[in-house]
Image 1 (tube, protein in one colour):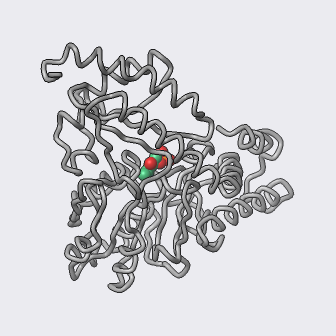
Image 2 (cartoon, helix red, strand yellow; image 1 turned 180 degrees about the vertical axis):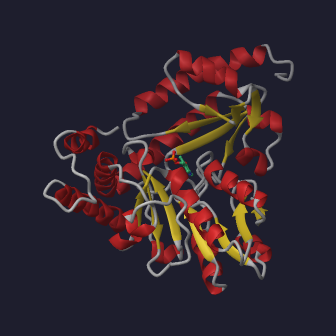
Image 3 (cartoon, rainbow, N blue to C red; image 1 turned 90 degrees about the horizontal axis):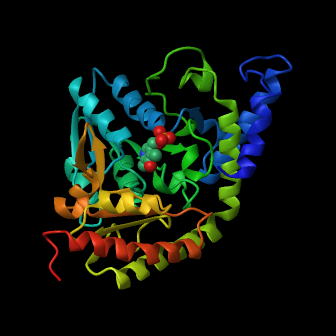
Length: 374
Ligand SMILES: *Cc1c(COP(=O)(O)O)cnc(C)c1O
């Protein structure tokens, strides 16, 4: 976490412990600070502060929007459109809704992980109540044509939610251009603390069922005393993101592309997973033929480098990534995929270090692979 973020939070864990819902002298200033953070978030989205509600993170934010709309429509429209490359917070929410009688269409994507807005148009039915399409993908970084999809939803009077957790603070977002009714964000993806997030709810949107019932917090959208230190830290992270977005984006794109170039030269048979240009500055996902991503990951970990692979270890088996699979990448290539994520604290030295240690690791693993044939 950014040091400045930590320092901003610290008083709210100690002396400024008032409850923002309390009208007394200890509560009032905390509410003021919380509302200042609403302004900071709203500014980054070109929204109004009254359109921002706080919650526990990106997952909850996705849940509030999707389940909120669905439960309001239990007796009405019951069709939802989403994509095959959404974050599990969206996908598993939709799967749960299927169990209680909703119909969900999971739109396919192209080889870059991109949704075609025409496919959305085709999927829409008379009873479609909600479209949920991510702003950018967390595994490959592909940025979706959200503006076009938003226009389609708006023309047809269908609610539109976008999971912008990966984009927020990294690339510019404007809720008016995007034509969204709901937009989800999370603190820890931009250098803020974990366990805090927010949902943008367009003013005038009343057809939303609160999934956490209780008091009147957050305009009756989300009950429960707010995570004040987390919110304050989130606000500081927004402030920094606003100041640094342009330079940060250039810097990170530079590091990302530098590593990509170096690996393309030094490791034969690699491919880029994700869109070559419409992609987050922070994400490089590459497929390396004839290796197990897990073995590379373990070797890199031993040398101090943390990466993710194209597989997720669930219930003891290696599940190939649903994102890479949806992009049409064959399973053996999915298992040989690595995701590098970049942050402001990374340097060109880090890139050089990875570019130096990765080729011999790949070479060693390929030498013992029955599939590898030089
Ligand atoms: C991380 C992430 C989430 C979940 O956010 P949490 O704050 O960890 O719950 C949701 N969507 C996307 C795209 C993410 O990258």
